[in-house]
Image 1 (cartoon, helix red, strand yellow):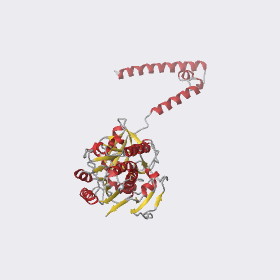
Image 2 (tube, rainbow, N blue to C red):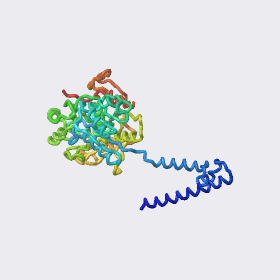
Image 3 (cartoon, rainbow, N blue to C red):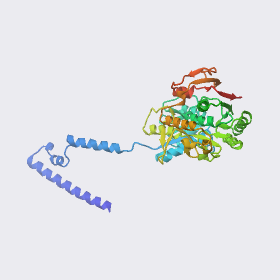
Image 4 (cartoon, rainbow, N blue to C red):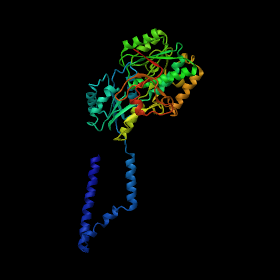
Length: 449
């Protein structure tokens, strides 16, 4: 039917055209006009554009251009150094990818698990061949090799978590959240909860990342102890790696039996220290995720509080810059509680926060633990949390850094002697210094062999 209509229309056009040619020939023969004067009728049908019509056309083109979509599909690929299930670190990264894919219809999330440094690059290239636009290694030791292929794939963003190395490239981004802010709040709670005056930390190994996070917790414990007039000891024992369940269990049991700790936390990734805390009937303080609310591990009779990390805040920054076509993205992302993300359901979450059993802030403190906390500690936790969310206060700015004489010697940066004030109270430490050079424990910590 459509073809027939088009044919009839073409016939009418042809007949009209022939008629016009004949009339033009007659006119030319009788008037002897030049060919330059002939197209007068054409100009009437399609007048030359005036300044006004040209402006209207340009405006219309700009309007059409403004309505054209500027976003494009983007695939975020995360290489997880460990398994995802049953871990707080990789579990939090995986949840971040899922939340971003849920929020943005043009964002896909893909991943690989148990990625070591020897396969980080081959996996990355495989992911890129499958359409990955952003590739991140979620631990430094296996994320750094991605720098080697950053120049080879200039249109791809690469990323790596920071442990202490701050090497960057134009498209090789380093990232970490200011977890120490939430750890400080946990320390306030732990310092107030202990009755024996002994708090234990099951830790992985000395590194700037581990030491920095531990120091945030230590400052909170010490502030609570000072406010309440308590003497509190903090014991740290290293397992040797991030995920060693038997070793972590043994350390937790030793801290309880030999050092009489009644509050325990960890800088490792297995659930063994939590298991021991529940078995021994002492308080546990969690890390990286809301382990009760998200995983259903234990309950609030054992878990006094946890802190939750929203890696999606950092990944969203990378995605936004990629979609904007930014060829020179920000290469150091060190975001804290004053940065946030709005999830698909409208919930706004800061980069880190205290959380427990799907509750945040003061409500995140275990009901059983809350009954044991003095009002002044509860009020201080609420105050400091609000101040950090508003960007008005930071424990690493407000406190002096006095060396314990222990830590990790770096090339060109030895461990400061015990008692040395490295940073005075009130001075803002740079992000670069915190991320790469904060290599000493704060005074008041006992590192166990």
